[in-house]
Amino acid sequence: MAHTLAPLAAGAPTRSPTIRVLAAFASNADCNLASLGFAAGVDFDRLLKGTSYEAPFGQSPFAFSRGLNFERSLREGGYGSVFALLRESMGFEIADARVVSLREGYPPNRHGMIMRSRRTRALLDGMLREEVSAPNLIDGAVLATSVGGVRAYFEADALAARGRGPIHIGEVKSFPVVDDRGDPEKVGQALDQAAMYIHLVRNVASELGHDPTLISADAMLITPHNTGMRPTLSVKNVQPRVHRARVLLASVPSVADIAAFAPHGLSFGAIADQRPAGSHGKQELDPRADRRIDALHGLADGVGTTYRPLCLSTCGLARFCRERAFAGGSPNIAGAQMVRMLPGIHSLGRAADLAAGAPAAPTEAPAAAQLVRAARLYDTHTAAGGR
Ligand code: SF4
Image 1 (cartoon, helix red, strand yellow):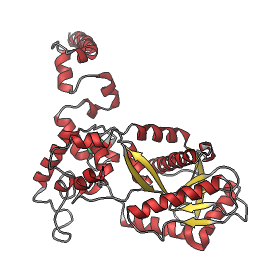
Image 2 (cartoon, rainbow, N blue to C red):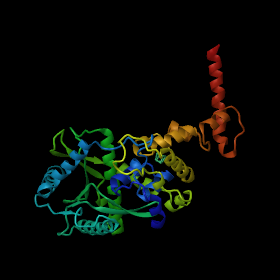
Image 3 (tube, rainbow, N blue to C red):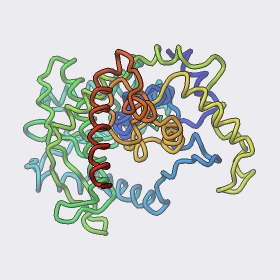
């Protein structure tokens, strides 16, 4: 696929392949456009910069530097504060302090990612065999998986730890947790990331002939206590999220099939902001914005999209896709329940026509019968109410 995906991404903003990005994408796994962009490594959060559909995402510089400082503080003294937490909360022995960091010493490219994923496998194998020389903490692991038939490598933000007993995954986040409670949305995202990591590590364990349940579904969340920098550890069971991650990844459509529907000559590069950095104000609209949006319509028409309200918090193209869904009267704009109630019906306008008695195609017939009944009921009640 590389010869197909590279030209599609040329000139577009790209993002590093991490498990955090993979976990966020998993919610949009049934969207062809999102799958194509993900496989090509395109950063949708930055793709529409300079247009009226620009994504409002992005971490504040303060939160970003707080996150870096917190991670750095955990690594100090040979991960001393992490081991202190593991001893206090997870029963690690005093002697358990063998760390391998894979964040340095590898080229910052795909070749480096492949080397790190091989080393990660070997280290996990040693941990699962309980070899004396095996580490009990891995930082910067890289795990491989296939997404829509494309082999990809993902860097873990989280830590993999083993004392006595199963391997535990520890997700490090810089938002505060007090009395085991944090911002529910941020905690949910962190647990989804930990669940994705657990799923991928369990895959490696199975491939190596180990029992995958030796990787615990109890994820550790390592966060600052309150608003300071002192770390605290909370444990959450994420088994349902691990199951969901497996199902969602397995449902990603074939990227090769999707790419075949991309209009010839169209690429994400044609949609991207090509203005040189520093040539314009931060909020200034790109004079080419309309042409870029036309190109995105072409790509979206060719490969297809699956807009739903959840996209607003998970995908950088959500404002664009929401407007398309409104313009087309897609049932998706009314949420998943409406989509389930209107099988075979592609727009709310068509649903209104069928409710008014328009002849139904065979695929529309089951929902059309319900719509006609609902319209009669509505008319009866509004007529009665009007008398
Ligand atoms: S916003 Fe658009 S491209 Fe992104 S997942 Fe939703 S439908 Fe797909």
